[in-house]
Length: 439
Ligand code: PLP
Image 1 (cartoon, rainbow, N blue to C red):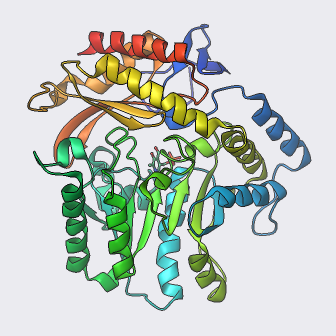
Image 2 (cartoon, helix red, strand yellow):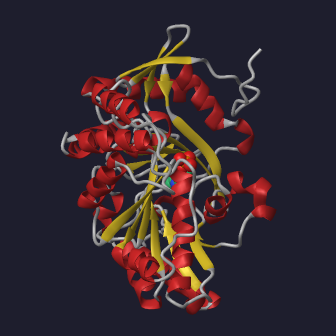
């Protein structure tokens, strides 16, 4: 009898024993194409020998040195390399063990920043209803994913939520992208006015929305409008790139394609590529200097932050993404993947939209394409698609949920950047069969 506490106690998963390139292999010898990279994690695929060598070398040299006493060579090198490739005036890196930790650090740093500069009255965060920022309590409160929040609502801090930028469902008929962006910006500004601009700490958003609604790309100009509003009111912009960052959308940071720089950003998943648990919060020089010139101590920390072996893995992954050309490959293969998905599913009677950017793609599933009516909740559609795809040797990431008060179902795809043209065909073939069997 197993003593593992699994995620789903009623559907025990197979035992994974090996990983080879884009495939995972279970104890029965079955092979699964990792079409969602787990949850947008495995950007390099499995078994990358350079990353494995870097981990081995580091663990033999130094496995752990607590950050209360030491910094370490791989942590310093990773921070330098992240900043060398980061947009705008992002200047400092706080290394943690995953996405939720990076977001908790982002929220706390934002609050502490205002204490340090003498604005203690700032205490509100504003986020979007279509969002997920992690499962720890601060991050969970910030996210708008109703399904994940519901049970813990009494434990969550009060975060204001505004409409997402979700063109497929949010844009009015005939409305231009610019008018839609203006309408959403006006809604944010009205919320800031309602709370009192001098009491707001930050606006928090994912540049390209991940799990909650499936690779939702903002309309052009949306984030520039948001940035202007934040600047006008002295509010920080926190961008959560935990899922969409690290090359997934075809640039190392997704915000590069929006032409904005955040004050604070969080990355994780693709930073470790699955080889080690690691995340990072990046902040601007101004924020760092406020702490350095003030109390000199960020009142936050975790025992395993800045872990040398995780940092060595992160550095090896980042080197492959940048110097090794894999971000460029994600852009190139992403465009082909997007076109192939469009060709295969663009006219499908139950696919409302094929969307995404780079190797971050999704299908939104609907009962009726004309009305965009979603499927009935009782169908358990996401679980069915996951099961049918898995049975055919494909790992994908289907989600059902309520978005902005309306139901929505989607399948998220985030394959490793080493995916080949032939493997794109394999993913599409298996997904088409799985949808056929599930819908
Ligand atoms: N932020 C976003 C956008 C995410 O997609 C996730 C995880 O899915 C998180 C934060 C939390 O990251 P983690 O699961 O590594 O704690």
